[in-house]
Length: 91
Image 1 (cartoon, rainbow, N blue to C red):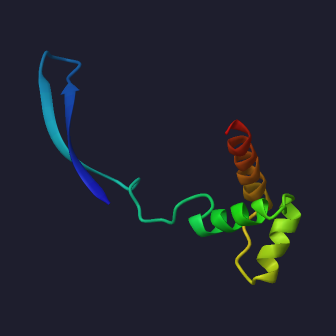
Image 2 (image 1 turned 135 degrees about the horizontal axis):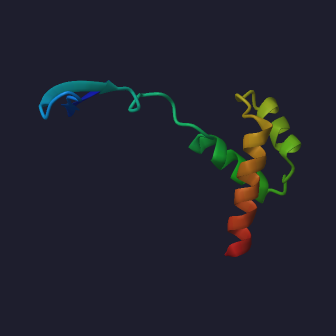
């Protein structure tokens, strides 16, 4: 949790008076949760299998099963393969 001081101004409707408040606001958008997406190790394995000629998502997921690795979702593998193909074609 991070705290950041903040200043609030309250304009009174019945007079020209203004009140100033200092508030410490806590927010939790800087958490230590795991990174989203595929880890670097998973990306390296997919890239290695792609270079070996295994280019279908189901075949790559079978490799994860055979190696007893935690298998990523098929959607993440498909997205990474699409990105990988785009990068290799643009070179």
